[in-house]
Image (tube, rainbow, N blue to C red; front, side, top):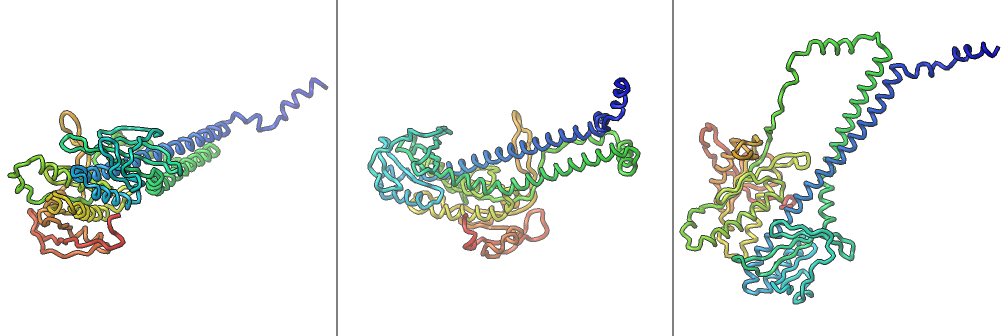
Amino acid sequence: MGDMISPILSQTSPPEERDSSSPGSLFIRFTAIMGLLIISILLFTTFFFTKKQEDLLFQEKVNSRKMTLSHFAHQAISPLLENDILSLNLLMKEVKERKELLYGVIVDPKQIIKAHTDPARIGLKFMELEDAETITKDGRTVSSTYLLPSGIRVLNLSQPILFVNKSLGSIHLGFSLDLIKNEIKKETSSWLKTLLLFNLVVFMMGAGTVLFFNWRVKHPSSKGIWSLWEGRKEEKKPGWDDASTSKTLRDQATIVYAGIKDLASYNNIKDPEKILEDINECLSIVTFNILKHGGYIAKIMGGAVIGVFRSSPLKKDHTVRAIKSAAAIRQSLKNAKNGSQNRLFDKVGIGITSGIILSGHTAFYPEKKYDFIGEIFRLTKSLYMMADPGEIIMSKDVYQAVENLVTVEPLPPLEMVQKREAWENFRLCNLTETEKYD
């Protein structure tokens, strides 16, 4: 009897044990492992690209605030030369009114506070930030971060105030890191939702493919879609996957051309360093406002700056941002003119058009250069030529995109070179109250 039991038990063992190495079982195990791997990769790529995007946005925010620092440093030169404490503290009052600034300090070469957003500290010796967490230097700008006793994290930017290579002192501005991070979080939220949706679609497609092949393993005799797939594989033409990917991009964009009018009349001035300083001061305001509203500086030539505003997942309203940038340039120049000897502040004219551009790397020895190409740049310059000092001229398509946000004056048609039809153009008067320079 004992010899009879062993063969019977081996014959009545469960079917699952006998089929554990079947193709279907192995396939399910394989797909489960691949599914976990795909989910891990998607989560990693989501985290990686989100972190990369946040780093790029943080650098963009810091660069924007460095422009603010340079602006106030330049404004402080004249009051420091004349020891005008009242003007310096009026400058600090302007600093205090900006919500992104926590404080502002101007000190003389002996580190004595000449102006402060807290007037009680004027005349005291400025104490360097000994407990700073990180300190970096970019050119003349020194960046440091530290924690206030109140728990607010601060980004401190400082820069020497120079006149003819002579140090008149330095300026320190404190920005809230929490505010910067909130701005970044707000801008990346929509992008992150898009990325998560894309990952979900990829996962669903992968899951559908797994289910299809699993069904195919269990029904090896079935025809239909499988046979069509096999037929498509056989009919595949040679070279179908050899296409190369072009790096040139075609975009809808809005161009801002801002330049100093009648600059040639200043060529006979005896002090060329002064006129160059005035031009740099004027163009720095133009550049700052283009960057602040999400534009790219395509070119700076002579007394003009060309800004390109394109759509992106984070910034889609390129025409609105371009109009706000132009209005902010005009207002900033008007504000800077008060108390300034720079005669160029009221000489800037601006042209704005919208259209298709090509962007990519053009080969220039010894390196490649990222460039923008399009007929729209010539048309924008034509509108700039039409604009009088202090005026903003926009094309019809730009006006149609923002007509609910602006008040304008229509201009006579301009017969364009190599164009039979006449253009309709408009002079920008004002932005609506809800769309002012934010």
